[in-house]
Image 1 (cartoon, rainbow, N blue to C red):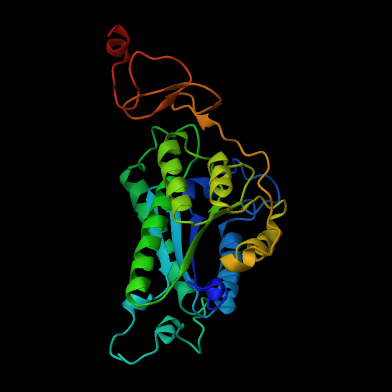
Image 2: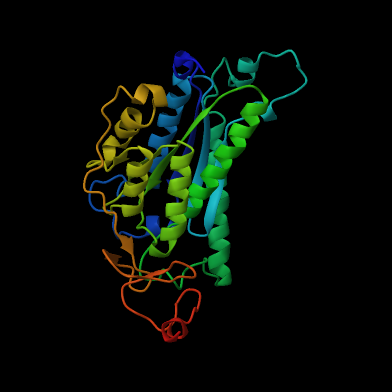
Length: 316
């Protein structure tokens, strides 16, 4: 692999995780004043659409996957066409041409993906309304009743799986793509997701996939701070919500090679503490279950998560 391989035709795969939890957007908790979250989901989607259009314009072979991080799980809102999924009728087509977007070398997001994203969000909203009429809550309501949290650990895992699939497809087509992940998070971290979150972060580090995070509300995310620090990504928290688009364009739009020449916001004061599973509080030292690795701030006779008996272990 030559030294110029990272410069010429640096195709990027951007996997965007967007906070769409209806409980968070319906609540005023943690949004603050003047933040992106305070301006509403419509403002975030508008800035995201413009940002993705700019991302497509930088390289017509760039690819995007947009994932909604909902209260009941993670859902694809939009995925760009991939090389291995292209029309195979023209077998003589140039490999790079198969990566080229549809309309004049550019796939305009406002024409194709914008309506797709909105339609999918409408389906999720309809499913939420139906669930409320039936009196059914989402998974994890009892565990996370005290806080409003979204499954970003599952979203990161889904993003890594999609990245692996894309890289496998492009390898069979003789193409190369460099993936990265961008998270737009507003809700608090879910303490019980600590282990799965760290597994996803270290998997991203192993694959050299940077994780960038833009915090939408008042709450900082210790998990995402660690993700940005470990994977050499960027962690930003816009002071003014109107500047969300500017932050996205200046930190997450350029390819990985060009990022080396930019002075990205430094992640300062990273909170490396884990949160206990019992009181959801960050702790510097605690007790870990030897079976499921759950973390507790106080000693227990049995694990609240997996039911492992600690008294028998202590007696032996």
